[in-house]
Image (cartoon, rainbow, N blue to C red; front, side):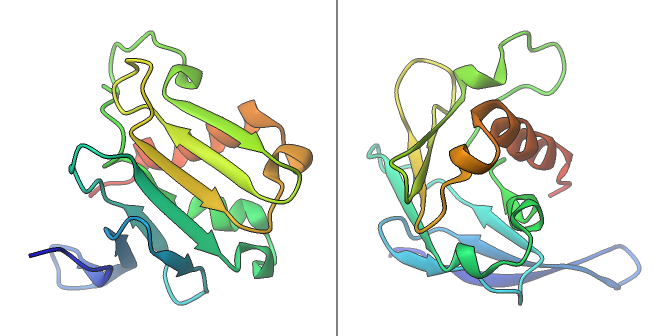
Length: 146
């Protein structure tokens, strides 16, 4: 039985709604970004194949920084938060063809791509540069508390 993309609301210990999360667990299915979720959590399908996520409508976001902050890549990465001396660039590579941006994720820094996220219609490389994008994604990924 395959999982589907699902909406989850995180609730804290006092039963207060803390964040509206959309789990993206269906690779190879286009996803439209909109303002109804606070977090888009990319979930590895663990099928042995590359997880390919395609995000549409990101260009409709007023502030791309806010859109990037909504991405939670923690399930796609096997990075130890403490004591890791590996540069983040050994886990994430960002490239652009001038109209789309592709984020390749190497979960354990073994040189193989495990997941790819394509941002359709957005050239983040032209706007920010690779290292800035990676830093933004990593900062948000490692601070999520799920």
